[in-house]
Amino acid sequence: MDKSKMVNSLSYDGFTANIHYSAADEIFFGKLIGVNDLITFEGTSVEELKQGMKEAVDDYIETCKALGKSPEKPYKGVFNVRISSDLHKKIALLASQYDVTLNDFVKSVLQYASSHQELGNEVFGLKR
Image: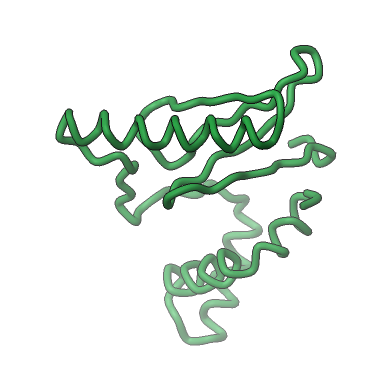
């Protein structure tokens, strides 16, 4: 991962998009995340970018309604994480020390991390 990369995002109507800038094309562009389809938009200014996102989201919601499908990607609440055996051992021992299952330990750590975005910025070296 390139830790010097700065990731920005925009939100509109419950949807979030990752925002990037192309110096070669001198344009901002965004991609919705957490949806089943590839939804992109662009603009030469921040205002154009925001308007582009609004139009893209509104159009996507209307299209999903017409097709009778949910606009948001479904999440099952189950995923696999590949970690080193050393890390696996460390967190299993920590979970045991707290008298919780490994699953409950990991879930608690993820809940904490998801509500403290500054931790992710620190871990991944991102600037916000």
